[in-house]
Image (cartoon, rainbow, N blue to C red; front, side, top):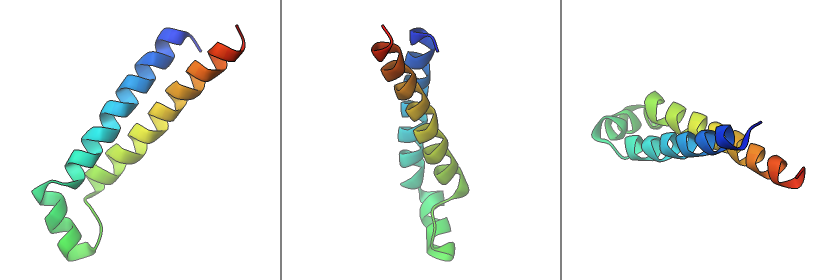
Length: 68
């Protein structure tokens, strides 16, 4: 994976992850948590997908560094 693609994945993943954390603190997520015991689906998906994408970007950066 090219270094620039890895950097973009890392930045986008981090942004999604932190946006998901913010969504988990929102009023709609608090209401969802009140009735179902879990945060909203949007908050969960944003956090999970953000972590996966950031992990892919970090893996690409670390692999690129070791092969040079």
